[in-house]
Amino acid sequence: MSKAGFGSWAATALLILAVVIVEFVTIPYMSLPPAQQITAAILLVAAVLWVTEWVSLFIVSFLILALEIVWLIPVLGLSGQVVSSSVFFAPFFSNIILLFLGGFVLSSLMQKYGLDIRFAQAILKRTKGKPSATLLGIILACSFLSMWISNTATTAMMLTMVFPLIKRIPEEHQFRKALVLCIPFACNLGGIGTPIGTPPNAIALSYLTKAGYTISFAKWMMLTLPFLIVFLVLLWQLLIRLYPARGLTLDIPERNTGDFSLQHWAALGVFVVTACGWFFASQLGLATGTIGLFPLIFCFWFGLLDTKDFRDLPWDVLYMVAGGLALGVALQVTGLGESLINVLPLSGSPWALLAITAAVAGVMSTVMSNTATAGLIIPLVMNLPFGSDYILSLVVALALMCSMAMALPVSTPPNAIAFSSRAINSRDMIITGGIITISGYILITLFGPSYWRFILSFIN
Image 1: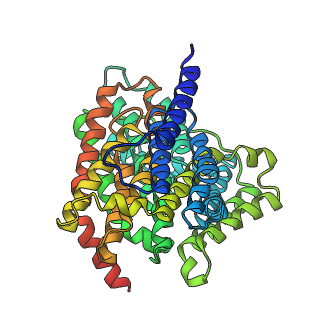
Image 2: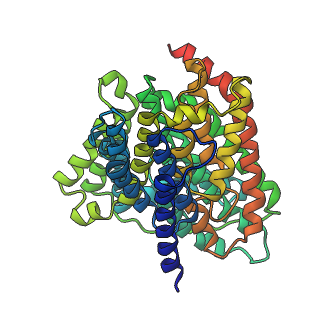
Image 3: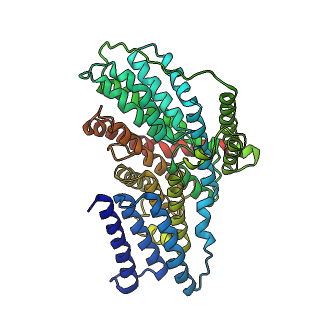
């Protein structure tokens, strides 16, 4: 039996087992109401499928939605709690989904017209063959592009650009590994800088917004950019010391990107207008998802993108995010989230709880999807009996830790792409990625809450 076939049958057996246990088996000492038992079963099934990837991750989102409608809603009705199916459908076309959709359109636009390549070349030309400067230039290019477009797409594009440079370096030279490793790690880190940079950010923003917090595009960047800068400097210095250049001089290969036409200027204008719209959304009185409609409508209306480009958008990522949001709705509607929170040692300090949950998020994101991790953990901490500043610090810390975990080739798609190049081995990734993950955890837990409360008090 093929691996895919085994995964499908294993997922089916897991689903049947979960239904049978909830419906026909009495578990000792389990006093949860029926609706919460069903939600717990959906949560566990989703968690196992997210970790094992027995089926595609976007399928798990549709499974969550289906189980909520055909299994959970009738039980809620029997208990006297009338819930419309639209409550669970809503996350699949919410403000957050529109925000990400706009980001994906920008990603497609930049790649189609080579704006990403031009930007990367502009960085590389200014390094003039100096290894440390070239390494920093690649890191800055990767991180900036990943703030706005898919970090997976950025990794693939930058590896394509950098590989001709890498091939000019002798195979035994350690600096080759630094040039390869910096790309996925910088792309992973760059995502924390904007709300659209990575799905955990969107999940965090969604729950914070529902809870009454006002986190604009600009405010998110103020909360995260200082940490991003520190992490990028750490990555740069770490790679220089682990894989020294030893007097190496680099030749910078160039790729012909053609003339800058009217369409290129239009694409650049769409990017700038959209980015400014997201940055000043609160002043404009518009939701970030509404701003995300602008590039979607403009690009396809005026032919900058076509139907094929629309079909090629990463819809699976959108549905992955939506499924996590729908699961969070079930946790809130049934009260299971509050019940699970009551199990945590809430008598301790908020900082201790942040340290524990951030560590859990880091470990989980190392071995499974950071989107799935954020979708599982963030909803569970939203009902904690702490002040609003502590809740916001906790959620932002969890979102950042989901992006900081990058110690294994399977931790993130960018890691997997870089590892597939065969220019590095798993030990290289474990050492460098592990140091970054641990350092990020220490910085976030020690300095995050104080900085975020200061920024909030300064803004408000």
